[in-house]
Structures are given as C-alpha cells and as structure tokens.
Amino acid sequence: MRCPFCAHENSQVKDSRPTEDGAATRRRRQCESCGARFTTFERIQLREIMVVKSENRREIFDRAKLERSIGLACRKRSVDQDRLEQLVSSIQRQVETSGDTEIASGRIGEMVMDGLKQLDSVAYIRFASVYKDFTEAKDFEDFAGSVIDAANK
Figure 1 (tube, rainbow, N blue to C red):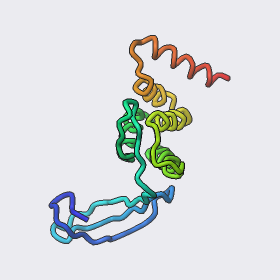
Figure 2 (cartoon, rainbow, N blue to C red):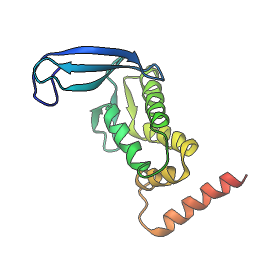
Figure 3 (cartoon, one colour):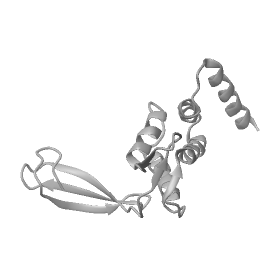
Figure 4 (cartoon, one colour):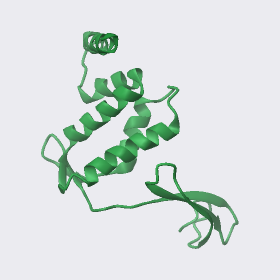
C-alpha cells in the first residue's frame, strides 16, 4: 500500500479489525520509509455494476460518489457518522446483490431517499432538492409540507 505522505510503495499492517457493520476491514498501517501511520479500509466487491444515467450514459458504480452525495446532504447535521456508513453499506449491498449487472441511477436515488427519510428530515429534503431538481422556492415548500404531513400521521 502506497504511503499517502511520502508515496513510498511499502507499509506494514499494524492492526486489522472489521468495521462495526462487518462490511469492511479497517487496517492501521505504518510506512516503512517515513514511519507515518494511516488507515485503510478493505471492502469486498462482488462484481462491477454499471449505473445507467438518464441520458443512457453508463458508468461504474462508485461507493465514494455515493458517500459524497449522502455526506453533502447531511453536512452540518447531527447525524452519526456510523449511521451514514451503515446507510452507504446497505445501499451498496442492495445494488450488488440485486443480481443485475446494470442499475438505473434513479433506483439508487430512491434507495438514498428512503434511507435519508428514516435518518434525518433536513438531509432528506436537501437530497430531494437535487434529486428531484427543485427550481423554485415553492418546490421546497411543497416537498417540506409533504414531509411534515407524513410525520404527523
């Protein structure tokens, strides 16, 4: 594993343990050259899944992109990082175990919406504003109203 500090090619694994959700292995490493310590995560990838975008463009499913999108929606919210990681892992597991080699980006968006709805209503509305392409304040008002109505039932 290449050192992120000095780019030396070799490092020693000092500690390995599974993450809380068991979806990855966390490894503490130490660079053999500069002695810096860093953490890596190792995840199982069952197969490459292609995401089909709205213009019929295709790209490889990227967990990091999913993490960034959910992270942006939850920015400055008091959402526990472990819960975010569990949501991302759950969506990745659903995508990989679906049996398909392609999945529509809209389906992934719906999975994120379902997860954020349970996690944090503000993050849910933030993500929806991009996912559903809100163009004016009325769109926010209507969607927020539906979230409030659903919560009061």
